[in-house]
Amino acid sequence: MESGAVAILAAMGEEIAGLRSRLRGPRRLRVDRSDLVFGHLEGVPVLVARTGDGAENAARGAAVLFDRFPVRGAVVVGISGGLSPALEPCTVLAARDIIECGRTVPPPDAVWLARLLRDTGATPATFLSSRELLCTVRAKQEAYAGLPPGSVASVDVESAAFARAAAGRGIPYVALRAVSDPAEESLPLDFNTLRDGSGAIDRRRVALRALRRPGLVVPLWRLRRRAGLCSEALRRAVSALLAGGVP
Image (cartoon, rainbow, N blue to C red; front, side, top):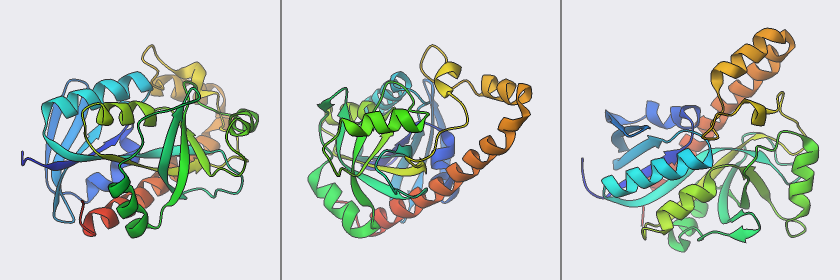
């Protein structure tokens, strides 16, 4: 593998499907529990990694990637829930800061962030990393109430874990999220009840729940379709960043 690749990290395969489909000369690797694909995007060598969802899997996968491969920087991508009102689905946000349990984690690299905002048109925002998935409108409202008034914000589970892994090794990083479910929308299931011991959502349990409750099929399909649209929006943003020349 070429040295100095840009690492692109996501928790779930759906989040990076758009990126993987556009890689030139893809070469698949399997390291520990992470699925990796090395290739070129906009002429830039990239290493696209799926770590598995949940903070524990994200931290482990990022650590293995950063310790095994020489990378020049990291771009965290994924979907998130909207916290601030009127954030439309598929809106692309760029982390200005990341907060976990009331504490700010090491911030994104200022130079990379400035380039990201200039080239992608992403909206600067606060990313809240939560131990639990915020599946209801009320849970999102309560989380948003703890942020400074007027904040543009979204919530996810893994951003802080990715950020700490990169910053702890001196690797510049930025983070992009596309809104899958806005603040005014609850998810069709409490996915927290369907997570395994590592914090990942057990897809088999989701499927079984849908079989028992056929009324879930349509909203789950709609959520999956929206995730695909978010993946494509993230692909366009990352491509624009790389095309403009990484720092």
